[in-house]
Amino acid sequence: MKMKINVKALSCFLLISFSTLISCKKDFLGQIPDDNLTIDDVFKRQVYTERFLANVYSYIRSEVDNNTENTPWEGLSDEMDVTYDDYPTYAMNTGNWDRNRGSYNYWAHYYRGIRNASFFLQNAIPGRSADMPDQLLKKYRAEARFLRAYFYFMMLRQYGPVVILPEEPLPIDATIDEFSLPRSSFDESVDYIVSQIDMALPDLQEPVSDINNINDYSRMNKGMALAVKSRLLLYAASPLYNGNTDYAAFKNLDGKQLISQQYDATKWAKAAAAAKALIDGYPRYTLNKVYTNGVLDPYASVKNVFLEIWNPEVIMAKSSDMFSADISGSPRLGAVANSPGVGGWHAWGPTQSAVDAYFMANGQSPITGYNPDGSPIVNPSSGYTETGNAAAATKYYDAGASNMYVNREPRFYVAITFDQSKWLNGAGGASITNPMTISMLNGGNGGRYTGRNWSRTGYVTRKLVHPGTILTTSGGTVQRLEVKIRLAEIYLNYIEALNEYDPTNPDILKYLNMIRERAGIPQYGNGGLPVPTDMRAAIWKERRVELAFENFRFFDTRRWKIAEQTDGGAFYGMNTLATTRTDFLKRTVFETRVFQKKNYLWNIVQTELNADKNLVENPGW
Image (cartoon, rainbow, N blue to C red; front, side, top):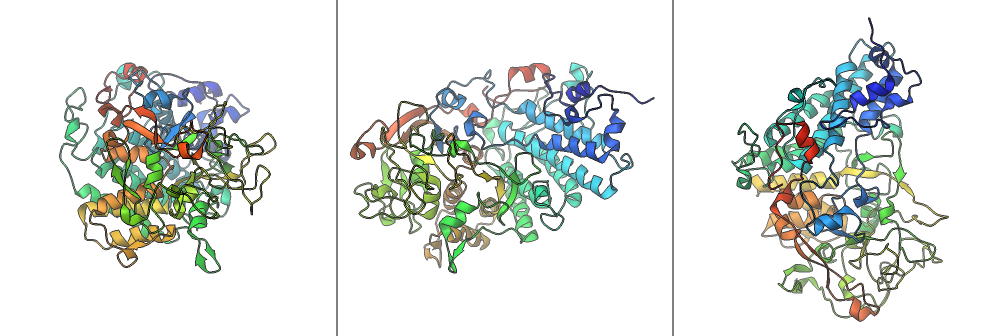
């Protein structure tokens, strides 16, 4: 006898987490008018099977929309500050973060996605559907398997070792003993995720050849799978997880070691090989380049990576429902808050150290370090100076802009709104050919005012903003994708891993220079600059600049085990209280942050620990 099942009950059954049954508004079954469907009925029909898979896709989180209101990675890194002190990032940065804080805890979220993917694999099986071709079902099953692997990776990067659930979802009436599963070690977790990616790969669609409709570009494909594998293995090879003796006592209740205590150089080799497999296997992916009259335009090339839908650099991107081409531009980067005709949220400010990280136009770093009082150690050969002002305007800034911002590399002007910079579009009564000049002074059109939408650092991020964005009551954002993975990251993954185990390999310089060439700055070696004596530092610098404000810095400083140096202490910006330019252009502490060793891994909330008696908390919490 076939069991009839109420749709709402089945939805909740699918969404069970370790700790609770939740409301089920996301589940596709709520869209089905017949609430007496059997499980057989659902997976006998292609349309219902596809809706179920769409629900699994829905667990891919947006990590730019409203930024730190929903996603903390930028606001908790040394790359950015969020002015709003009612956002959790403010309290967490200043030390108000204990094991009971549930902010940005995605443990249950991803386990729901994992459970739904497993349920799909268990039930969407060959021969069950009356109207779905077997080849299509194989592809859908591969997508579900890869999505499950992706969700595990997203947990791994935040929490460290994860609990690998049984292939067959646990029943709703499972006992607490059956739910009480221990964490797998970090290496076991990585091996499992890799095995699932490798199992899915043969049946995933090709990045282009199998795609006939742009609405399918967001579906999981072979390029995406290889890209996630590249990032996963890079993280696994990094110091936080590879022979980290700080975690010698990090064990399960039965004494099982959760982080390997022996350094293994072959992990870097595996990471390099994974990145190279994507680079060599899919030459269709290329760095996005824009040419004007046959000449490379670095500014447009870098900017358009995030604005031109499915340009050749984009490997993985999220759209609003994962099956359409566009999503809204992120309002957190929208416009100049205190300017008429523009509007927007202007409270996401790059830190001074993030601004300092950008190279000069001659390809050299302007700042090589900081004195104990926070003053910069200037690289004299870079040409950088903090005295004087620009005598003439350029397309990036007006005359009178501080020389701090003059002769910087194109990526700087793509990413940073600074005092006397020019706005992106013709809003506020200006025109595209005569853009508005931004004043970041107290009371200026982009500066501090009586409202809340201003930046405490004196800078604002603009990297992901479309030039057509106007956030007023009569305007809106321009549609675009949320780029998750792009080729420049894969190049950087490859050379970082390669440098750690084969430092004389010529590919290191080759791919590093490919990124610099697209960025419009001199290359190392024959490109005009000497080859760096510290290649690791050079790669880290390039990674910080190229991937700035894309949610990498938080994880990079942790996996490199440098967050204790980068994420605590005094944080600087400009003097946003000042009403004169002379006073404004002074490095000023806007916040003193607290970073503790426990912050390398996220806390697991008590409700999850209570629900799984074999689940151990992360060290220090």
